[in-house]
Image (cartoon, rainbow, N blue to C red; front, side, top):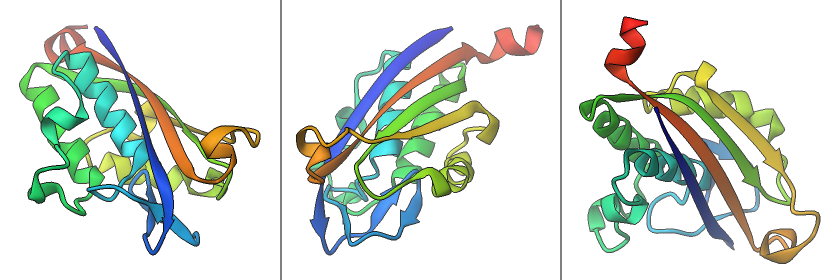
Length: 162
């Protein structure tokens, strides 16, 4: 088994869609980034890459690569899940937290799990929590959103032999 942690944050700006966990969330601002800036997908992807010991998100999806301009972060996560399986592992659990003052994410969590399943994660193997930053820091001032994730990998063959 292997464990990885991931983190991501992006600034909120006018004129962008807010995409979290692959779901478009109604809000007057969105996150700025080279891709769709989905902090939850980025944190989960980074956690999986870390568990594999293969670097970080920027190694696979550099913001200098035009291929990833405005790309879906679900697609990015899917590529890493495919690499995970090619390396003989499977993601068996993800625990994550999205931190924002607004909007409220609780109504969208189940939709996020379904969206993340399109990348190859089992909806029953994903936990998503939503928290505020109690008015503190850049998140508390409504300047951005952050996410943390932890994932657990297990060898494919070890799970099938049990």
